[in-house]
Length: 428
Image 1 (cartoon, rainbow, N blue to C red):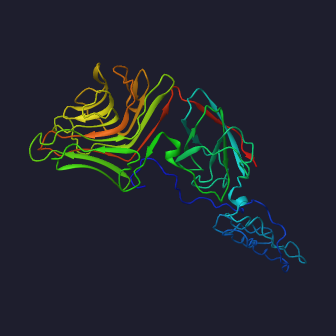
Image 2 (image 1 turned 90 degrees about the vertical axis):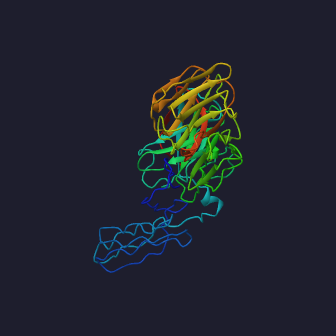
């Protein structure tokens, strides 16, 4: 998606798998006897394979032909060329083709599994961030976009490799960055406190199950053309505003509010709030990530009263409870507010701060913004709050208040987070 700050797992130039969907070598194909000292013929493609390609001819009497084909089931290597004056090399194909990907066996055949051991406490319904290094996937073992990756609770046992008779269900997952030859980032949500995950891969017939909605409590990358009413509620700021809009275009959400030709002609605040709410508890906190967040019309301290904010809100025009990264004529600040107690700011007024990526971690005892080095232990809200944004402008001579964001995700949080150890590759 255009403008995203996270990779969506689409990488060009990936290696082509040179085996069929069933991964079997076929040594029973017809062969050709050639005259002495000539190269072996091309390896033959299995005609039942999906996009199968023939292997290339052997370059000489001592060099086998390379695997061919550009599909998921490329042809295998041709055999050696003639090795004596009397006998030419055979030209059998090796491993092209196999089960049709539309068949139950071909579409559900996984070749490898690794067990991921989880250490440390975490709550139910937890989103695990797994970083998979270059050493995890051998060359060609996984699809370039990780579309054949599947996770289950428990060990590498059962029938998941064949897809037949399995009682375990794949876990919700989302691929943030796919780079099998480098560092891949995958989020996996577990419904229970499982100590071990089974990671299956190696199926050229598989299609992706990467889905942010299945991996987080709330996820939106604003890929549509309008605000998703199943996730968000838009509350206009007032009927006399000349510009009071919430728009989604090109993968970006924009909330904007302009006051009109006279100051104070449009009372209230334009707000977008999540349909559901979240709350920190005694056993887990809440983490909020806003990617590509910025306030384009905010020019710094003294540039006019255009207030914008992002974070956790209680839904009231002037919140009683909130955790907000805010900007107005005085500066930017990370503020916490609790009803009956008051408000505290952790960034001094007058400080210019560029957000771009806002991460808030909210527990029962504190709120932190790790990348900014900010921690607040005062006036921490204890009630459930919505995720959202506000924009307003009390100065008619200034540009409008505006919030822009590329994506948002919300998950349960724990400190310290769990650690992960990926076990050895198991062939299935």
